[in-house]
Length: 195
Image 1 (tube, one colour):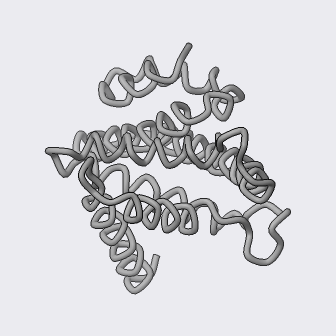
Image 2 (cartoon, one colour):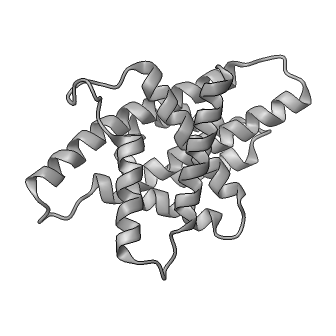
């Protein structure tokens, strides 16, 4: 990845994390709505070229990487980091499960978002499998790999909390990560997802 692209992603992740720091119980409803709309547009907007088509593979991977980076940075920030990650899970829930009396446009957006979330979850699972397949690593590389697996599984747990059916096709694969003795954080996130 080019340095300018990496720098751009780092700035976007930093901006997302700063937005999440604005979320608190005392914050105005309008701020919550603005942050919700921003995250929805950033991570869950349909394919710009054809809203009914799947995202191109590179864009899907990029969105997943950014989502995982936001989850990782937010949860590592300490203090209210875990609560803010739960808020991100709440964004997913609101987006995927609108009120029954919601407008037809909102219901269509939810259906499109669910389709996109299936694609994002599939990409996250693929990234996990690629991480697992790396062999012959030094202890430092193994620790970094376990950390990345933990962050990806944390992101998946947010999708699962929002709509468990997103992970149903992947239950068998998730279960195999329970045997990964070096990734205790990852195991905790898997246990949150499994029935």
